[in-house]
Amino acid sequence: MSKKINSQSSIPASKVQRAAKFMKTGMKVGKNYVKHYAKKVVDPSLSKDDLHAENAEDIYDSLSELKGSALKVAQMMSMDKNVLPQAYSDKFQMAQYSAPPLSYPLVVKTFRKAFGKTPTEIFDSFSKNAVNAASIGQVHQASKNNKTFAVKVQYPGVAESVKSDLKMVKPFAVRIAGLNEKDVDLYMEEVQNMLLSETDYQLELKRSIDLSEKVLKVVKNVQFPKYYPEYSSDRVLTMDWMQGKHLGEFLNTNPSQEIRNQLGQALWDFYDYQIHVLHEVHADPHPGNFFMDENGTLGIIDFGCVKVIPKVFYDNYFVLIDGSLLEEKEKLRKALFKLNFLHSDDSESEMDELQGVLLKMLELLGRPFREEEFDFGNDNYFQEIYDLGDESAKVKALRYSKKPRGAKDGLYLNRTYFGLYNILNQLKANIKTTSPLKNKEVLV
Image (cartoon, rainbow, N blue to C red):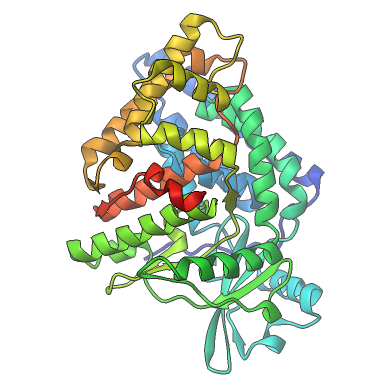
């Protein structure tokens, strides 16, 4: 039985309130470190496992109360198992499904501001308790005229606090994840822009309708909810209630390999079409955004986080991922310069070290593109990815670089592929893959 999560009657909204919460959390983390090192004096062999677990608990509790962009960053980082120690990854995954929900009076207040009416004045029925609560908003079930709806309600103050929250979450990202500070500065700008668009439910409404209509014309075995502008606003988004199971629950039904492959193919084709034809992509591929049924149909929600891929970045990135330049050192180096992996003031030894690591990374991550079919159920392949992440973290030219490495446009695209690969691995799906360069005539 799942643990009951108490609702919140308020969210710290002002910069002062939110900064105080961050400071209090930072003090807790500092005490955890002091306690850990005191124990280590007595037992030098002591690992950091308990320290990570305590820090993960304290940080998640704080972020889940604050909600918004800080909690969203935690969710993003939990998807990349190469970034965080396991304790953080496990704890922060809860942000995908089970942040403490907002109390009903605050939901009513949001509705009155948006529509001049309460939820029960608009719908025949409306669940007072949230069915799902995550980082930016929570979902309620409603009905009207024998139709069932999912109504997403944004938390108060989320949009207004994006910029200040990200400034305060930066020290946690640098210290706990061991990330290069210059990389964090570059990526925070991209994260800020994406999160601001994610808090605009009118933009999400437009993108949801537009992208789902385009995808349905091309991709098989996918479905999307219908969206309702008349029941939506800047902070409320209403759509059909989707049937089906989330990934973990679906896998517990022991589906056949045929159905796993069908779902995996639908997921791959969904992303393949968006990236290589539309050049804009649903960039939030965590399992909570997908519904799977026993017939192998994939339901897809949440077009709040959509990455538009610039052509210059696309051309250089996918030439590398495809592997066309892996054997051509000079051309490869030029592409790495264009993508800001390398800089003109790098020493020759730094360039060689960085290029060596990136060659391994590109070969590994691009491997599915170079085969007609790929078995994502091959755990050895994913172990290679995790091992490379550990190896890369030890490369001095990456870890201690005073310059950002990589174009900011790669952040959400890399995240999209990591999330896609991870879901396909859990499905144990064997699917037909295509090289992006084979589609070049479609893109021109």
